[in-house]
Amino acid sequence: MRYLSIFILALLLASCAVFKPGSKEKIVVPPSNTQIEAKVDSLIGEGLIYFQKGNDSLALVKWKEVLKLNSRVPEAYNYIGVVLKKENKLQQALDAFQKAVDLDSTYYQAWNNAGYTLFLLNRFPEAKQYLQQALKLNPQFDRAKDNLRLVNKIMSGKLKWTVFSMTEELAMDPNAIEQIKGYEGVLKMDSTYAKAHNNLAVIYYYEGKSDSAFKHLRLALRFKKDYPEAINNLGYLYKQQGKYDLAIRFFFKALTLKPRYIDALNNLGETYILKGENENAQRVFKTVLELQPDNKVAKKMLDLLHPKK
Image (cartoon, rainbow, N blue to C red):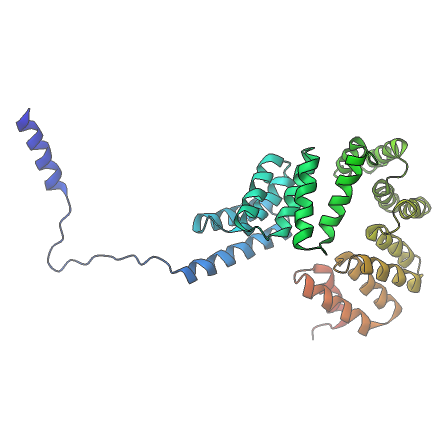
């Protein structure tokens, strides 16, 4: 048996590669920290572009590649969580958001995202704590303010969970007739729910029922007067009626409540064009592109204002 062991060992030794005089070794130089950071930034940006175009799967691939290069990038976990939440994988999304805030305790957007996901999981007290932390880090973060108000309404009983969840599900339904029936059902349960009135108004408008759209937008604002989306939508209806000055007032009011509101800015710019105030329109659309460089509406309108020769 001893001889057999020696024979096997000899075979192993004989099969080993040996450097010979004059042979060249290929040396792989690992990337520097600066190169890795640049690649991470590039992949984050590529993922955001795919996400904005609606290609969530490719966005997810890019952000996972980031974590292969550096597993301690909080932005990558936050963005992955956003996609997972969109896919209704709530616990996985929560885990990703939690990892983001563990890595960066000042990351208020991730605190907000985790808080809203906890809310969707019916974990209301925890959701409230996370949203409060987001606002502690950034008291002006409107999304966290809205989400905290929503949590408080559910916890206080002012809004029923059934009413909220049905409204969210209906927003994803592509069938307008079913949406109308559904929202009417929601409003029978809670006639004061402003979001249901607003969403129903939008559907009525696209179904050619402007009077019903106006009615429900006014009801939305009766029950929630500082509701920028409903104010913007009402301005849009006035724009469609040719009441441009009135529409502009509503868009400005929406922007006062929500300063980075892209839809309201685009609507304002379009209304300025309809009024013949092209310089004002140009300023508005340039502002849009400063906030959102890939905004197609603003790019299209600026091209119309300054056609290429």
